[in-house]
Image 1 (cartoon, rainbow, N blue to C red):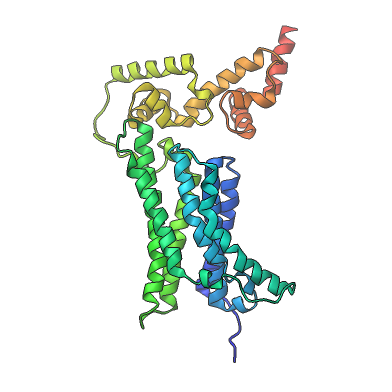
Image 2: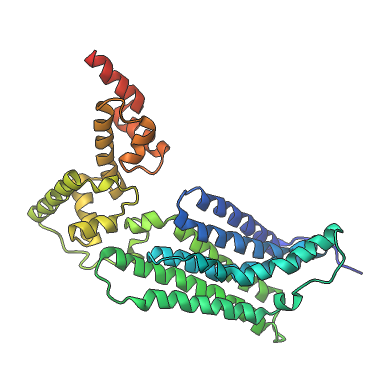
Length: 365
């Protein structure tokens, strides 16, 4: 007698994790940063894998058989997607031929399409390339190659001279470490399944490790701006040396003076990709020192400090007349989106940019 498909506590939790992954996918897409697209689709791929696992464990796979080979396709895209993100992070050229990296995943579209068309009743044929989809060690080898490429890219250039490179180096090692953990969890399943002690709890535990590693990657990518501003996990990415040492007031004043002159003369804030590490490199400061100078002398964090200059620049453009469109001013002064600009402007001036401009024009009249 065939068992009735049903969910238990474990599978319900994994199903929720799968839906959370889909939510994180859309969240990453909403960041409007093309750099995040590979990671967004990486998280989506793993959500699909986890969803199919739930169907398998609960025997709903017999009810919805058209997802049965999707995990294999998704495994083959994880390496190319993460490597593409790393290439962009290290400002390496991505050629048109990069599409060839997705060739194994593209091949696995064939057996998936065969299953879907058979299920719809449009064709009646054997599953094409089924043998390829069933080669789990091919998948492990494929992911191992990309794990090696990630490590090679990280250690290729050992000349780290800037603060940005230091943060990027630590950041890359964390991401590649999580991917290796994901790979080891995958391989361990096909090794442990041959032993008599292996049961569903082991299977669940492996999936938990895989879930945590992939969703941690998604979480870190979503918070990347905060990491590169030195505001998130500073002890992990920016270890503080001589933590108890205090700076002399005169030195703080001197460094802050150099910072404000640079902000007024060079206007680095108009770059909407400006991060603490970039500004530190421009000034020749360490990231920790610059953060300390900003916090101590201005009483603000990095984002608040930079946005103060952006608002002042926006005020000048608004007063210059209607040559500058309000719709474009926010981008011209360095804000990433209109909503953030309007909220910051209204908080400082207690009015919208349009009201600010109209009010000053009426005073002139």
